[in-house]
Image 1 (cartoon, rainbow, N blue to C red):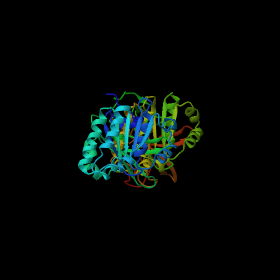
Image 2: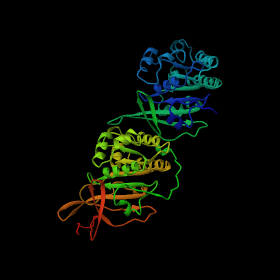
Image 3: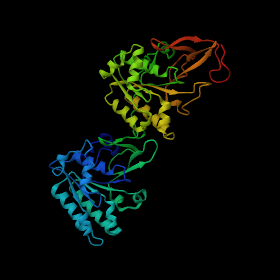
Image 4: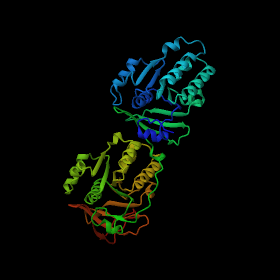
Length: 474
């Protein structure tokens, strides 16, 4: 079966391939959730002169206002109005309808569907039909509508401000081939919109609530990464250099290819610089790298790298380095996962940096969801054949606590970097706490920030208290 694309690749993925010709799909949601924008966006993307889209309105806003609201969207084409996308008002027909009689309206919609062979038929709002007829008449009318329009192979979209209670008992939902539920959640500092496929016959759709954003490009959907099941890629057995001088020797010759490495440490200890080391090493080897940052902007990272002699500006200009700065206030887990997933699609990126995880967890405000999210995100990166370098913040003073309680097992390698007091001076120490399926050095080593970035120094002897048992002594 040839599916009708929504024009949004990620929405097609969520729907299980797109919209099935001849199907009836209910799009439900409260005001402001994006129902009308989504339906019109699909109309303008798919309609042609031969197979137009017909958009029926009942007693909603006037067509002039409806069209005026579209002018700010990139998908809107004024030249398509009429020849490709036709708006039809059903208000007069509803006013003149007899008690419990929607037959004239249904006959009009069906006639146009069979005669004009549109690719898409939209009724906005179908819920308003309930105001004119009883339950039995509505059931018969909608049965006639969905079954007869199906013969035209047009996709029928029924839009309405249906509540969750309506979805449990409404006749629209028993007759529909698909149900798409949109939501609008008030949440500071930024409200959140979502999309959930409740039902889609003959399709392997993705479960869960997926993030929705409305921009000048129209409605955008970002799949929930937990609903994706990436195929794990077997380890290649080779090791890649970390770029941090002296660290590879502690890690048995480098980082196993495809591993996720977590660098823990307090503010200012050198975590971001270790990210620059990791990326600079990849660039020097001709690899393509992706850097996700929540705090430092692109220009700040480029300037920081320049102080160590690394020309990240040239790498960005040559598309060898991709830097995505996601302000903490705008952070959404699904949007971030989609950015990473799309960047990894062609398999060209081999190194990924996320700096840092603690900011990500705090800004996302989805603590219950985060373990499953992080597991899925790491799987997406690994399935793409890339190696991941992640940082996370710990406290500055006192023993280093575990900031990711219950989640450390998700990372193949864990490298803590911390401050130490040594003969009345503040220094830095590093050790390899964990490496999965790999031998590594268990010693504690000095480290410092020098011309080559973060660098590992000599081994510390007779040092104790690092796990919080006692005061430090040498």
